[in-house]
Image 1: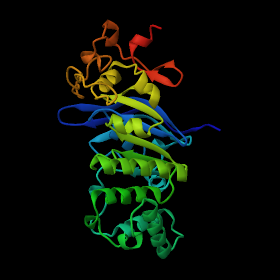
Image 2: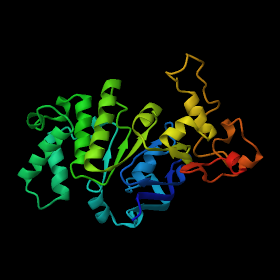
Image 3: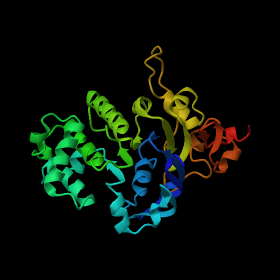
Image 4: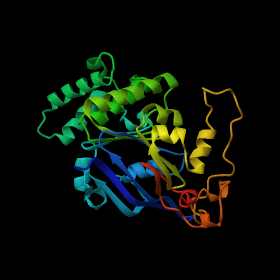
Length: 323
């Protein structure tokens, strides 16, 4: 049997604005294996979150999925009717969003919101049993006194506890894939570490797969098995996490790592990537990183596709096509 749980092929998402067409995701392809912690990293606006939302067709106007396939256990989600997709969202594929205050409804207790998630996808379960499951999952995500906390409203909880509730909502139906979109961004550093440890523990306990969206390379290094780097709507590199940090191949990945202080080395000058992120309405011809790349040649006026330079290490750069 294949170990691939999710396979995205040539995904394209456009946003139609008065200024022009924004090609937010332009030909993105990758796969996520069963049981792994897969991270997508890149700066703000590179298409990470749009890619994640497009997996279950959560793109709202003026956005539109204009091409590609999303194969989940061999089934193309982009071809499914909305009725079928609703059965998958929250049951087989669940989301953890970066702002728990926005993800939770302020009018209902957190226990009710978890129980509702159980009841929607398991109509034969009685509401009393759904509330029992809600209390159990609150205990699983390490919320103290879960019975009492289940009666609290979101505003009565701290940011860290609200994020644990959001994780509980995602985990309660034991999904096969969890997509965590910047799950630690709104939290302080100590709480971030606790949330990451919790995600790793739950992943092992429930044998689930996690795909995390982040711009934080420290978070990537701490939890990931494999990493995909995106730039301006394109995939530029995919590699096992250790190899990406030890031997980054794409000039953009090299620039990202050079811009992060290394605690194991003496204090040195932090190198910024020159230039600016391209206008996504008028993107550069060929490789989108070309205007900022010191290795750019005339060949870079053509868009390179991903090539496997070493085992499981893919990069989209003409430098490596010469080998």
